[in-house]
Amino acid sequence: MIEVIVTNLMVQLDNRILDHQSYVIEVESWNDLVKRLEDTEWTFTEEHEKHKGILHKNTEGVANLEYDDYHLSFSQYGGRRTLMYIKDRVIIQ
Image (cartoon, rainbow, N blue to C red; front, side):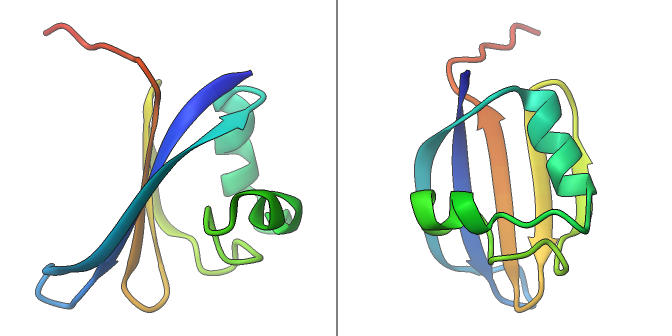
């Protein structure tokens, strides 16, 4: 299990942030999380009930999914933007 920090943003068309919330979830692996988000048939129903807000109850609205080994972002219908990253991951440039 790994811990992932999730930040949900409500963004206006001019990219002004109206509201935000952040919290930590546990997932089996980063690759599993990415795979689930890529699978439009899979739903977050169980996780939604457990974590209240990681996503709406399905992934139909997931768009612009981008990720690397420790960051992930996507947008959803209605100006929602979700950012995720692995907790305690330190990047030295």
